[in-house]
Structures are given as C-alpha cells and as structure tokens.
Amino acid sequence: MIKHIIARLGVLAVVLFGVSLLTFFYTSLSPVDAAQALAVRRYTRPTEEQVTQVRQELGLDQPLIKQYTGWLTKAVKGDFGNSYNTGKPIIDELSASMRPTLKLAAMALLFTALLSIPPGVLSAARKGGFADKSIYLFGIVCMSVPNYWIGFMLMLALAVNIPLFSIMGAENWKDFVLPALAIAIPTAAANIRVFRSSLLDGYNSDFVMYARARGISERKIAGMVSRYALPPLVTLLGQSFGFTIAGSAMIEFVFSIPGVGSMLVTALSSRDTVTINACVLVIAVIFVAVNFLAEIVNTLLDPKAHSKERAYDT
Amino acid sequence: MIHKILRKPQAILGLLMMLTVFAVMLFAPALAPNDPEKINIMQKFAEPSEQYPLGTDDMGRCIASRLIYGARVSMSIALPTIAAIAVISVLLATVCAYAGGIVDKLFVIISDIFMALPPFLVAMTLVGLFESKALSIVISIAAAMWVWNAQVVRTYVIREKQKPYIITCRMSGCSELRIIIKHIIPNIFPHLLVLYSTGLSGVIIMISGFAFLGLGLETGTAEWGAMLVNANKLVFSHPELIVYPGLCILFAAAGFNLFGEALRDICDPKEG
Image (cartoon, rainbow over all chains, first blue to last red; front, side):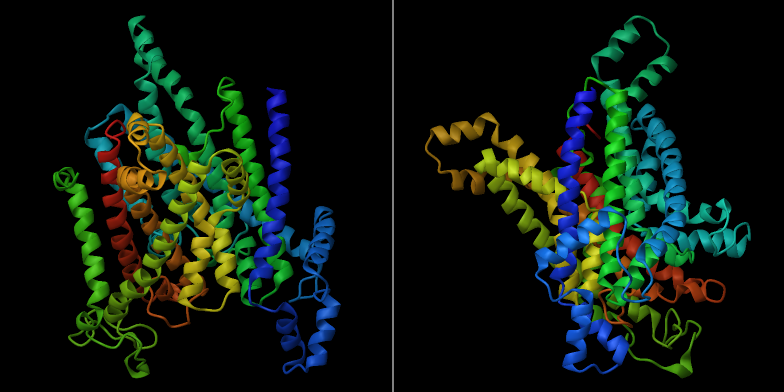
C-alpha cells in the first residue's frame, strides 16, 4: 500500500506542476494588460512611456516562459510578490483571508456529511417508500437553488425574523453556522443520491445475502453495507471541500466574511493579475491535496480497491 | 423511450417546466408588462399594483418584467454554453476512445491536470478577466467544464464500443465513421441527454452566481442573479425582492434537473 501511495504522490507532483502552468497561462490568456491597468491607476492618464516603465517594473516585458519560471520559483517558497493593487506582500493578505474561508469550509464539510449520510441511509432502507420519494424530491429542489440564495433565506429566517444569529461578521464559530449550512444544503442534496445508490449496490451484493443466511441482525448488516458504500462518499466529500473554497466568493459576499473568495473577486475587478494567480494557485493546491487525502482514506477503508474511484464514474 | 418518458409523472412535470421557461424566453416582450430597463426614481419600491404586478425595485424598475426578461438573459447564455460543451466533449471523447493508445493516455493525463482546478474557480477567473460580454461567459464556462463532461462521455463511448453488436457491424463492413455516427452516438444519446440536461441547470446556477458577484454582465442587466446584487441592503426592508429571483432560478433549474433525473432512472432502471 505504501508503494501505491508513493506512486500516487508522483502523479500528484505532475498534476501540481500542470496546475501551476495552467494558472499562470489562464491569466496571460486574458486580453487584460496588467501594466496598462496599473499605469491608469497610478497616473490616471498614462503616456506610452509611463506604461512601458510600469511594464518593466513589473517584469511584464520579458518572455512569458521567463516570467513563469521566475514566478514559480518564488511561489514555491511562499513568495507571491506584491499586490499591484495595494503594494503589500500578497502572502500576508492571503494567509489572513484563508483563515475564515478554511473555517467556513471545515464547518460546511461537517454539515454536508451530517446532511448526506442519514437521509441516504433512510432512502436506501425504505427504497421506493414515502421517505425515499420525499427525500428524492426535496433533494432535487435543493440541488436547483444557488447556495447564496439559500444563504439569504437562512438569514431572513434565522437572523432577521428570529434573531438567533448575527447577519454578518466572522469572529466566532457561531457566525459560520448559517453560511456553512447554506453551502452544505445543495452539496448534500447531490451526495444523498450517490450514497443511496452505492448503499443499494451494497445491499444487492452477495455478502449481504450470505450474512442474512447466517442470521446476522439487520443492524449489523447495515453497518457492513455502510462501510462498503463509504468510499464514493468520501471522494465526494473531499471534492466538495475544494469546491466550497473555490465557490466561497458568493457566500462570503452574502455574510460579509473577509475570505479568500472576496479577495479573489476584488483582485479580478481591479485586474490585479499577481494576486489572482496567487489565489487560484493556492485554492487549486488545496483542492488537489484534499482530493489526495480522500483517496488515501479510501485506500485505508478498502485496501483491495486500488483502482481510482471517481465521483463522475458513479 | 418517449413512451416511458410520458408514463413518468416527474418527467412530464420537468418537461412542462422546461417548456414554460422556453416559452417565457421566447415571448418575453409580449409577456412583460413594462420595459425591464426603464428607471423611474419617482416609483421606488412601489407596492404591487395593476401597472406593476410585483411592485418595483430600488430604481423603480418593474420587478415582474425584469424576472420575465431574466429567463431570456439566462437561457440565451446557458443554451449556447451547454451546446459548446456538448460539441467539444462528444468530439474529444469519441476521438480518444477510437484513437486509443497514446492519444487516449495523453488525454487522461491532461484531463487530470485540468480537473485539478475546481471548475467554478476557473470559470470565475476567466469571466472576471475577459470583457463584460455574454460571449465571454459562454467561453469561460465551456473552458472550465469541457473536461468534466468529456471524461464522462469517454466512458460511455468506450463502454458502448465494446458491445458485441459493434463488432458485428465492423464484420459486416461498416466504416468506423458510420459506426460512430449511426450506432454509437444514437445509442448513448439518452445518457448524453441526462448529462446535458442536469448540466444545463448547473450552468444556469453558475451564470446567476457570476451576475450576483457583478462579473461578466453589464451592471443593471435584468438577470436573476444580478437582481440580488443589492440584496444585502434589502434584507430588513424588502425581503420579497430577494425571494422572487431565487424562485425563478429554482423553477428553471429544477425543470431541467427533474427531467434529467427522470431520464436517468429510465436509462439505468437498476438505480431507481
């Protein structure tokens, strides 16, 4: 198994390298000229010379390959340069804004797990029954609404009409309950279906028939089947953690959380390409790392299945 | 197939909801009581009346008309997007599955790299970097989503390709191109319909998200997500203005999801 993990680490390195390349070239692809944007901010109406000067200062006059290697060698050490917008080191702002986002994502992950497992078990156990059908319908409704709107609805219900929570702020854990719930509801709705079908798969397999023949209690069988059905769910949960961070901008906007999503949106609207690169790279690295972690958990859960389980295969 | 769809109530419900959205999109000018863009500061937050069935917003614009035109804006971006994704993913997947060998391996590696970036992040970054145009949203979402769809289609094609009837076709002298066009694509078509129908609802939600963040569309566009931009300020005073656009997104997205999921149950009866 250790050999397997080492092999996967090798693939991971290749993927991460590709990610850094993609991140860098996505921003270079855009028609936006960062030097022009900064020159406009600095001199309001810049002359050609001033733009060229800014371009040299930022190193944007060099060939793309050279820019990329320079950026990557620094980024590996955690130095993303200074923001074009504020002039301060990006890493400081990034680590400050990462904290609330990670807290939010962790809580959302917890809620997602809590909201996907019991309904999934219930609808698999009562297949075709009333509970199954209502969970199915409710799930489709929850899948069809944007999480930021759920955020607003939760805010209206539990912060405005019944003032249990505050409508903004990111100080203590309680402030993260509503935003995390808003993220968890649509994600869990999608997970329930996958978990249900892998549970049903488990119930239909031979080992359950054998266990029943031996007279093992249904409760124990449910435990066995859950273990069998867990790996796809672990993959999905790992993926949803990364998706939460990537899509946190809207929820952060609703609940005024100063996280990495809002940092990225600000950077996007001011064409601050170095900050954009830094945010995208860090989020992508977290996404890849968490997916890798989920894979390892799955290997531990079921050492036999070395094949790569993927959410879109189910 | 059509027979089975017509016997499933949720499929019919989904289909009706889809048709409603298409109808609203096509006949928006006839349905809307007012001009959705017309600003009338004198009529700020007007109560629902005969002229303004749902009242007006913070700029005095007719909410009902903006919601109706919202269907047009959303769908006119979402449909080309999903069409672009469909063309790219089907083409790539069939090429890979048929070329096999090194081409296919290369595709798997490249798609692993592309899939290491969360699609929403890629789309948001690209939308934010391009100019504010509908076309840039289409390109950005397609650039972010193609790989996820191509992967799924590739498994469908490979699975179908291994079936015995394809070998029979080949033995009876069909050309590979003919097999792909006449046999493989029609046979995986229901699966593709599931994929793109549920995908469309995801795209609708994504577009509304960008509009909500103020990325990609001109400010003041009558789009459902864009109508929520000022929602933070309205939470206490006019909560109904937050509720309406969300319900529209729910209606549109749920239609495609219901239809897609019902179709999935028909395609794979085992799971249902």
